[in-house]
Length: 127
Image (cartoon, rainbow, N blue to C red; front, side, top):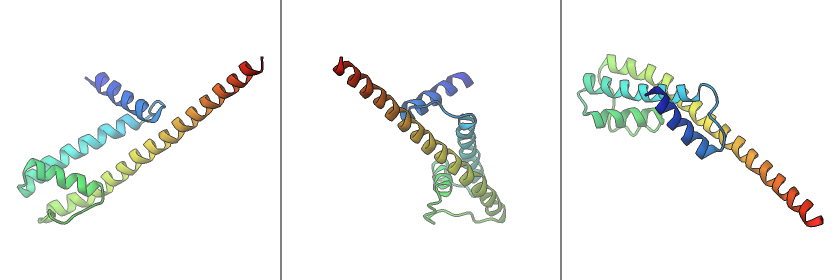
């Protein structure tokens, strides 16, 4: 199962960015999924929210949107949320910056390949 998920994530990363995912990227994405799952179950249990409301709160919290329609009400959930934000936001920024870097590397790779093709065409037309 781990290999299948790794293959799927690698395929999408390479298809979108044009380069293979860097070491640690797939582990970071997996950690984010686990973090969202843990948060969803935690808020559902401690706040009594539905799973969809709990997941919604986790996503808007990690995306730093924070609409304010849901919020932690107990000291336990407030402390959990503080730790959740520090861990999740840092992890999210790492993932997004890695994707951005990969997109730039992929763009550079495509530009280099186009340059090679153009220089080959110039050589062919001069002969």
